Image 1 (cartoon, each protein chain N blue to C red):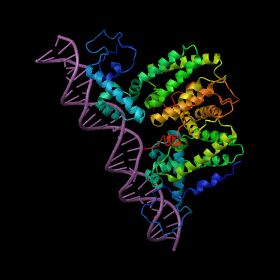
Image 2 (tube, chains in turn brown, cyan, green, purple; image 1 turned 180 degrees about the vertical axis):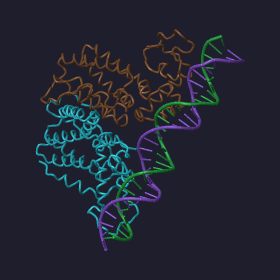
Image 3 (cartoon, helix red, strand yellow; image 1 turned 30 degrees about the vertical axis):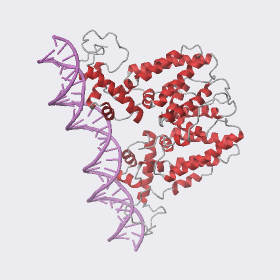
Length: 243
Length: 243
DNA sequence: AGCGAAACGGACGACACCTTCCGTTCTCGT
DNA sequence: ACGAGAACGGAAGGTGTCGTCCGTTTCGCT
């Protein structure tokens, strides 16, 4: 990547509206005049306000909430919002990066759990609880943005780790033989369908549904019924892609 | 097997275009000169064209497809569409009345099945298949329109019949003891979440999910895990109600 | 054929949201 | 304190959908 100085604003994202990786890293070279992230104090304050407002608005009104409303809620003008986040995808991604990072961390931990089934259950329960309560986060989770390469990369990584976890579960014999990795995606999508109501309802519905499904995934009773052919993962991706 | 009663329904439903069919208050003059539905031939033709176009558009673009697009697809002007269907709800309701009637008929038959479990499975499988393929129909199914009294009444009736069926299943001991009627709604909502993709994918995902869930509903293995408290039905209704 | 009324559809105003322009305000290093 | 320029936000242009008005066309009865 070329030099990413916040030089030309029309170049927009040049001032790193994106990645989370560099916190106190290497950007001190050229100008450390302002904060460690190279933003002026008022800019940084507005950025946080916008993100908080976006979380509220997206959770309340869905991921399609008008950006004007987000800006108003944040107490900034529309232009400021667009300056920080040139696209809706950028805003959504950043707004829920914390929760999504949390999810990824969960997966990271679960994959090292000596009891793979416990690890899997923990991941699923925790993640679905989060998704149930934060509608916007759920939308971000289920939406695959064409441009956001790093975001998608994280997703793929998480998926690979889940695959590893599932594989270990199957080896341990706790998952039914015909379980497929895509069944996990199925679970998350199903949860999404069940979580359309107000948060409390969404949470209750989610927990009951997940209870049924995790039960169904177990080898234990592994009774007759074989569900039809599993989906391919790429079929289940990006089902709610914008545009 | 099913007699073809549903065929007669699409003809009988054309009595009223909607709740506010009174334009000029010129009723009561008893002019039944035109067809039995009181519509002129071109009006009836356009009405059918609009309904067909609506089904296509709603299935393809979702229930929020612009009405202008529906009108264009039908080859009529926007005014004609609004004249026949004053609100979006009226159009959606009429467009999918046939499929919804089919669903109701299915339930009607299943409730008399001597084997209640088979009846329940048939209903669930058939309905979810329909909902998977017809996105607009699914939206109509999951949306509770404030004004459409008759439509909601049918829904309630179907629900009561399903309750009866479930009750018989539980008495027969084929449903786990802690099964709740709302779990059926849960299933339909979950299916909705899984069916966002293209039809083939939606169908495959639906069938697999329903396989898992019906399996989970059975008393047979009825293994340890008790899902959390069930939802109240009214909580699960109208989750996607339009403004 | 002719007439009255029903039905049609192009066009229009209203509205919400998106996105950018540009003059103004504020920050930060000197 | 001061100046350069980064950042701000009001306002305006653009787009798409809604819902309706009104002159024109088509139907069906006599």
